[in-house]
Image 1 (cartoon, rainbow, N blue to C red):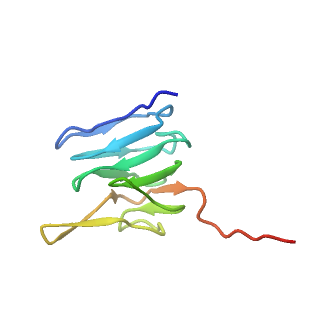
Image 2 (image 1 turned 135 degrees about the horizontal axis):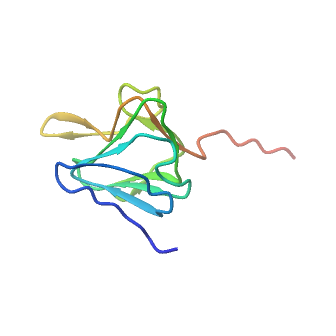
Length: 120
């Protein structure tokens, strides 16, 4: 499958769905996610730089393969903004100000955040 990527231009907000995307790259803008099927379960959400944000609307639980922040893959679990009930709320410090990678009350769901039990 060829890689599909979305690059929000500076200061713009985009709305839509990219269910066949292998990767969605967010930088220098806000990507609005208004429903839980905006990306496919195999999509990797990549943040590049310090100004990219994903707005996750109320009720959104978006299952993806995983987030990646500045080239570093993140572990399984739930991700969201400070007003969400997500386990992880990634942020960066920009000029002394905290900038969250996610906003809104929705969540990104990444498989693999559970416990593994092995019986012998």
